[in-house]
Image: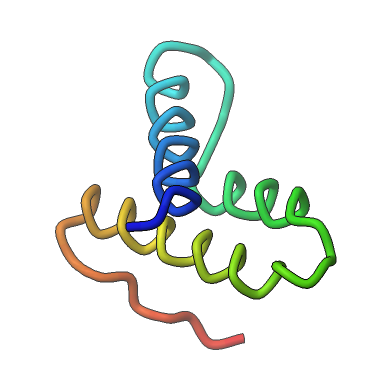
Length: 73
């Protein structure tokens, strides 16, 4: 896991913990969309998106116990 992936994993887990202790609604998907907006449109964007996607997959699998099934878009 790269440093950037670990950063995103920590952000997703913080969202989960904050939801447990507050009335603020937060989901992994909404957090993913917010983090996606924060990624600048520069040369490293593809790597950052890969890191974000990897972190989302790791956290989702850790919570649900199985890999996420890709949705049809």
